[in-house]
Length: 206
Image (cartoon, rainbow, N blue to C red; front, side):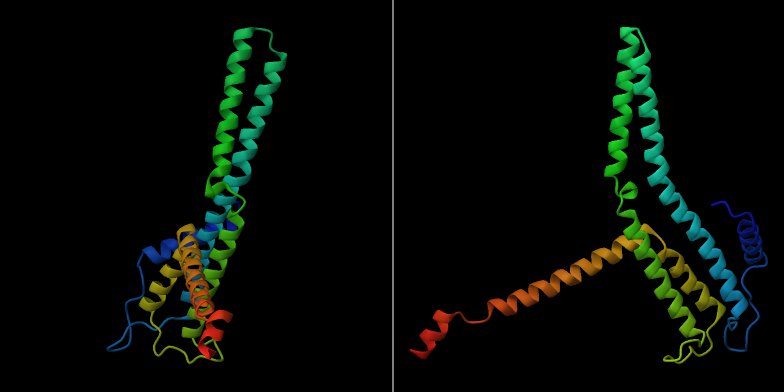
């Protein structure tokens, strides 16, 4: 991702987190209470990494196919312009190979149009986790803040926040939702099947 200022700040904050590490001086009997500065710095780091992750996914979709299609066009043009039979055959075979590679890319879930759906799902998962963190910080009107929300707890939450921005998390969430919807559909179908038929009702009256 072309973002020199963002990259500079990201590297600086990562270096600060690495040395001397997480704050270690806390209240007696407890951990270090989290500050807004710490939370938003960690969020900035995770968001920068997520931005690069999504950019690479989209680049694989658009530029991967674009590159393969461009090579195929060039090879097909050379086939038409080249006089030698052997050369034509070689170029034609290469073009066919590129076509096969492009088809393979398009069949892969990472390079399918459905990638947008998965990115939207990742955005949703991350936002839900971020809302959870904000509530623990006491920024939700309908929720009481977590008592003594510590740096260690915030760090664990942000690790989960980072994992929410992965294809694996999106796929697992989709699978879980699909399983739940399937369960509800079967339960509804079972209730329908338990409704007596007209013949059964008439037999009971008889």
